[in-house]
Length: 323
Image (spheres, rainbow, N blue to C red):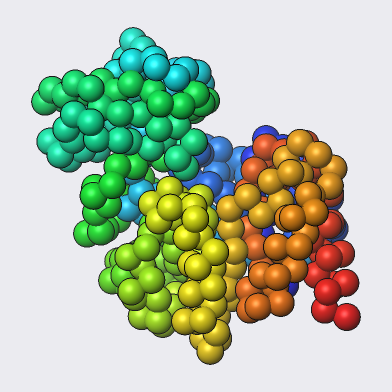
């Protein structure tokens, strides 16, 4: 079973422990990292690999066609009924929230709803201008740099890789154990676009749009690994349908000889507790019993208080249910 542990502040200086707990690979989220930070992580990984005489695969999670807000000066608290201003820029100016996607501003109108940070924050548009719009918050929430931005009907297919993604690929193409996970894949063509730049490195397709389910077999044919990512998929497809997407993913790909990975709040309880919830344990067992071959731990190891324990639980649980 694959246990992919996301690196972040919670796992800093604990790489060897996480490896010894049973991780089979690491993930670095490029959307929340700089090239310099990636370099620091690779140095830390090299040190850990020398100590353990093992080099685990590392997935660099690329932005792909996903829209995100820009860089904030500091995390922002958004309160219900607050009016928030968004501007067409990469970095924050004054108190406005930057959105570095010019096409958004020409296609948004009053009463449209937008979703931030995997749908945790919902706002309704109340005023639009050429390079600015205002929205009233319908929910409370915390927002930090580069969190997801979504509006129904604005999901564009990748025509060319983003320059930011290309920079990460070029920066790491000389590292033997690095592969690339592409966010928001909708078609095999998007994977092939990335493969132009990755030589023979492994490429994973992150399935988090309902449209991708029309092309699952074609995407799998050109990918080395298939990840079902429930965060953004739950926003787009309605959380009530997530169970059906989990089933369909396996039904379509059950005969495909590729790793089939589940991601998104797999053991969310372990972000702040040393044990998973009973429902998380039961659901994880169900997923593994029905064809999934591994999982991605995200916040659990990136920012959680119990990164080693989360990996150790997965390793012990997989061993237990496969006896």
